[in-house]
Amino acid sequence: MNFLRWFTSKQLMAPAGAYSDAGAGDEEIPDHELIKSCQGGDTRAFETLVTRHRGKVYAMVQNMIKNEADSWDLSQEVFLKVWKALPKFEARAKFSTWLYRITHNVVYDWLRKRKIDSAGELDDGILNEADIAAGSRTSPAMTARPDQALVNSELGQRINAALATLNAEHRETILLREVQGFDYKEIAKVMDCSLGTVMSRLYYARKKLQALLGDEKGKN
Amino acid sequence: MPEKNSKHYSVMKKEKTEELFVKWIDGQLSRDEEAQLSDLLNDDPDLEGELGELKALRQSVKAEIPASVEPPYGDFFNSQLMRKVDLQIESQRPVKKAERWWQSFRWAWAPVGALALVLSFFAGHRIARPETPMVAETKINQPEQSALTTVYFTGEALDAEVISDSEGDVSVIVVTGLSAIRDDIDFATVTTRIELPKSFSSSEARRFQ
Image (tube, rainbow over all chains, first blue to last red; front, top):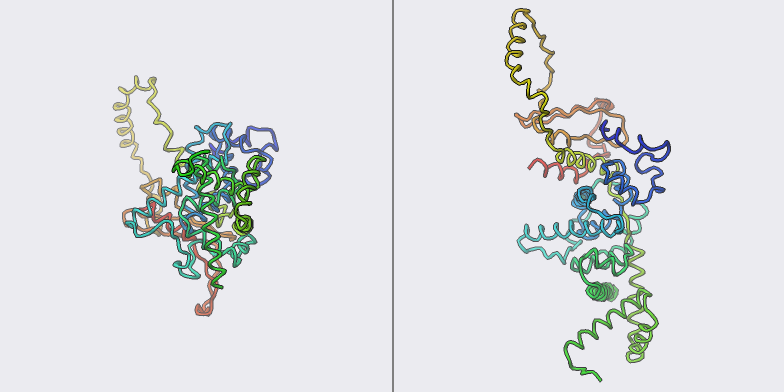
């Protein structure tokens, strides 16, 4: 570890037992305290924050772009932007909303760039998982975890396929509401839109999902 | 009675109705809103069934799509990220201005330097050349690349040294601690494969573009 980082870390300066290694016993330290430390330049506190929130960010990015390799890069980009923007973060704001706002911006920048690079051939509303070669891997091979086993259930696969056909705004609204449990105001902040727009998107996204899954049921 | 054929009124009514449906599915209706929805349900008996299906769908999505998925090799994710953070901190560090106190001694540099040369010549001091390495010269010209050149192993006590030759555009990774490969091994029957994360390879490739 960088000597300067170690020397200036709170672990050294704080009373014994106040801090531990990143990821071990850090649940007691609330986010706002970690953020305060990060704003003072404490990178160990930032690493603890990353460990705590990386799962949610990675899940959100992966569900939005359906690409494991880029999900890794984009998730790192999110946290790098968080680090750069932390000096401007106001402690009274909710960290998770702010974090997801940054995630939203990173994902949409990626979608826009992909659209430009593909010269409009790819509709970002259609990320057809069936087009991805079966068995192809874009991330390190791992044995299935319990949460992965859940995702891989038949209904989960159908829901994922249906979500992939929604446009980015509808998909994101559903993920923020149903999966991440955000309320309407928080969704409006993350997506930078009005409450009415959130309601409308939620309504139409749910209707469309129901129609897609209902169609599949009919075929089966 | 308001003009029901007014376009603005229809849009507002439609938005309000959608809001009621969404809130009913989410269990967020106020008492007044419950009463409004009740009127709508009385007008359309099929509506309650449709909304019920949407409610069930919501539960399915919540159950089937995980809110949190750890990225593969979380410790590597963190270490790679923190290296980028360190580079970011380095790039933000302001260039240290020259202290004024030594500027007044600049006049002495040239004569001191010349004196040192003369002394070295007369002393006949010879600096022994270090033993040249048996491998390509290690000379990393781009510190930002060397800071991000890492070798990551899972679960094994191995050591690695990365030797880069920027002129030849060659990098050699010397790994020590690996088990010896038997002479009689049949590679056709070996099934264990170890792959570097493709995300790491693509990330590295992008950096060198």
